[in-house]
Image (cartoon, rainbow, N blue to C red):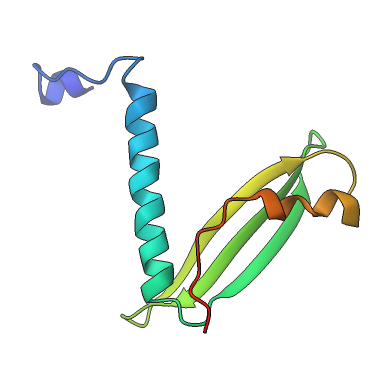
Length: 105
């Protein structure tokens, strides 16, 4: 498809792609941390547990806040899979989710 738009375009190779994805992830994480530190005065955090049709269990953490433009922002702070049932022992997994720093007032 890109060859039709720009014939001389060379896409990233299979060895470059993981580095590019990681760099983009780091940039997005930095933007998210900055937004949470400067715009999210009182974020509402939500913890969600679910399992898919194959029986794999997941736990996610999200934050909702109103930004400086008065727009509702909902951001995913972390997602992890975990083994076993939705018991207290298994739900302690969120402590291992890398959640960006949120300024506390």
